Length: 439
Image 1 (cartoon, rainbow, N blue to C red):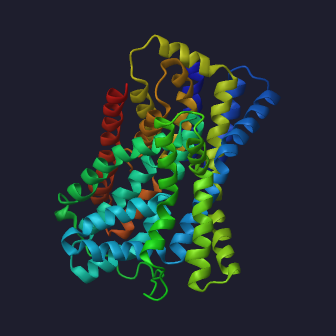
Image 2 (image 1 turned 180 degrees about the vertical axis):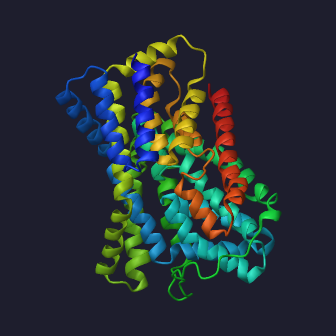
Image 3 (image 1 turned 90 degrees about the vertical axis):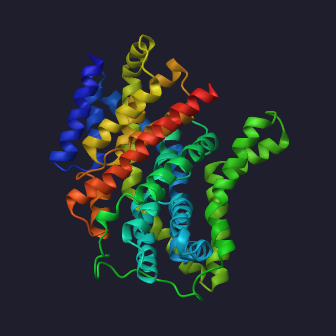
């Protein structure tokens, strides 16, 4: 019976979001309440459970999301992202331009939601196409694939970070495993896949948008730009390595674990960015603070959707459904990693939103970790991989790609949708292979 109630709850969520276009946060909280009452919880108890779920999820995540948004906006609005891209493009040259865009997408995408990174980097893609005469998809697909891969696998990107908080996975370990999977995934889904798309090539859409292009004098230096962008990743990776190789009471390990905490690492990058990208570039402190303040408005609804997923998760735990799912898993041979990927994939296909699919999956499969002793970091990556599969007409990213790359719906399905599905399946294969090696 509990499984049927969950299934009906998910169907209700789909109906509310797909048919009636209900906001994701409202839909998740409403469904959480309905499922809790259907499972026999008292209404007031359900309310407390929802509040605890929201507080518990955002308690560990709000600082990371907020600091990540600030860092991403600081990098984009000061010209640092453009500096990183243009320098890499000059270094790699026309023949290896795809690799420059892969690296740019990975670096810039780490602290940004997909749509923000996409709109930020597309002007650079169009500029390269105009200057070099190279095909649009040949240039753009590697960058787009890199942005999608960060969304699946690489903290401190908000997507995998949110899932890791729910699964109580070590973010440094998740980052290292994610990098191992991300590199081959982005190579296959980016530069290699783009070579198969020659027949879909189009001219960039005329007059679609007029983005801010920084002059040489307005942009900060390359070294400081890339340092501010990747310092959180470096600090988190050092903490993960220390965790694997040093004694628990080692002073160096304790220091690295502190500065490698995602919130601390992101805060350090923001402080460095305020001085190096902001004040030293001639901006007033008020201007820099305005940039940071504006960044929060852009992610407010995403934060609430993640909070709604946390509420749904907590209701499942408090109603006893988690124990029921755990008991079922004791008698099955299905890999928890595969189950995690399947649930996320089904929700992604139905809902369109990768973030909602991943957060909802996290609440459903959380009890499995304790029963099967599955690696929480690998569960994060399996969920992330499943959450990007088969993007189609119910996903805003589908229409974003279609519009900017000047494609028909059918052409977008054959390019963008196939690329996202490639990332999903390669990611799953990487997770399963890592699981065999580690365990």
